[in-house]
Length: 397
Image (cartoon, rainbow, N blue to C red):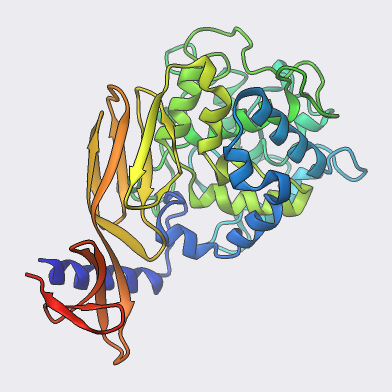
């Protein structure tokens, strides 16, 4: 069975690498998405460094983490400089919201539609304020022409959103109710724009908001997360905001535009790069449960979860656990993609890995499977197990 899986895995990877069509809504935790934007890792490393390294940021929480990100993103944002305004967005989207399948096209917000990136006076697409202008993101202020927040959207879909707050219920605008208009977005990739919207709201709150004594030069007093618009929306319900964020992980679409937005205005959205930081900031406003992982890496590296759970990916770009066991919640695990879906959290969540597997190239040019056997890393080849130095260690059936 392991041999069959290995062959299938090799064929799957090989067929993908040479495929012409790219599902840009595929989650960033997959190998496929990471390989399609390999330069992103370098951009992240250069942006999150020194006091703002991922390790230092993960050690903070609450207002202190808010303050660190508020300073980092405020200091690197160029929107107070000349040359940036609402009109400048029109010609910049083609370099930010790039469709990797069609040069010159852009990907639309909410429905994933591929559209000609040439501005045509708003007939095809216009500029959608994730944080509505009527709620503080006036187009005459940086918040109203922030590339990270103001997205290109099909004109008709933008009109239907209006200034409604995002949320669940008839009085709210729910991106899940918008039909995806891109034939390359596969349903099994669980593509949704709920998470995209939540991460933009989190970004706006951090850059333009205030927590404790922390704020920056972009704070105008009108961008607050808790705006008392209702009880089920992601402006005022932290639980719904984090639920959307954690159940719809960052996508390739988001990472492509995060890179493009940084090139345009200097700052990144950290909740796309490191989604686990969101719950660390807001954990005191929700009921959360600890998450621990043994035997493998997990992305995002959640240490906390809500009762609604999350979606994450186990392993690395070259390694996926064959089996995963979870206690404290219901779960589903796909060992081909590495996708772990956690639901119905009842308490502390423990994730453990029975065996790890990775594709390795042996010296004679044949594919072999690296795994854990009797507590040590071994290379499987032709039903035999060898140490990483090549010494035989026994049969594995």
